[in-house]
Image 1 (spheres, rainbow, N blue to C red):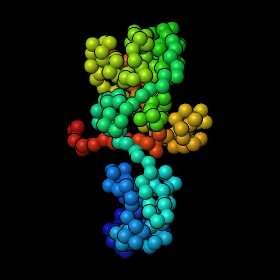
Image 2: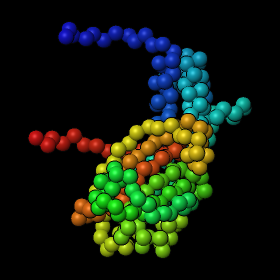
Image 3: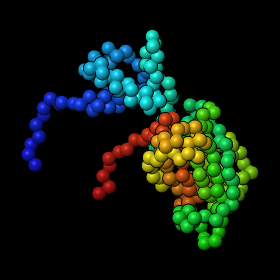
Image 4: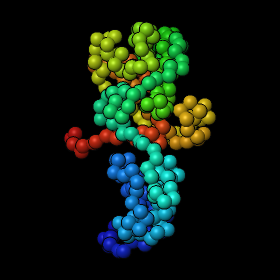
Length: 247
């Protein structure tokens, strides 16, 4: 390939507005602002036109992060909380500094698991599992819908515990006398189906963060398989990665 040369960029307004919105979003989510700087200041800071800045603010408003109030300015209207992925922890353990996590237990049942669930939990053929469905809220505002499968010897004793007020992870460790070890996680973006949207208070087809997680005890046994739908307007997933060669 030939050598690339640097040139003065020629941005389309939509491209530039998106770049500005990304920087402002990071600052908003980091708690830098409660009221954003005025348009004139943003034009100066980003060396952008007023129309471009207004388009960037419109993108943030469409996400529900800010709202413009005449005579006041552009206000941050939605708190969004960082959910770390660097440590295996329950939601209440992760977000304890932001408020109280409570759980609405919608379904508890002994079910015959789908084949993929039985395989992931290493359940013998024909053995049932405990299915648990919860809407989880932070200070009364729904943030996730959790669908959980547990082996019988783990799940059945949990039914006598405070599932409305405590994390399942903590209860598993107390009941087994073992620490949790590792979890395999996959993350993808999904759209809320009408029922899920109604349960967690978002618009139909709203963007959600979907986590599939299978959690193991320290001895390697899988004991918890979950599909968790997080509200993308309430939580952001964060972690720190290091580049360490394995060769």
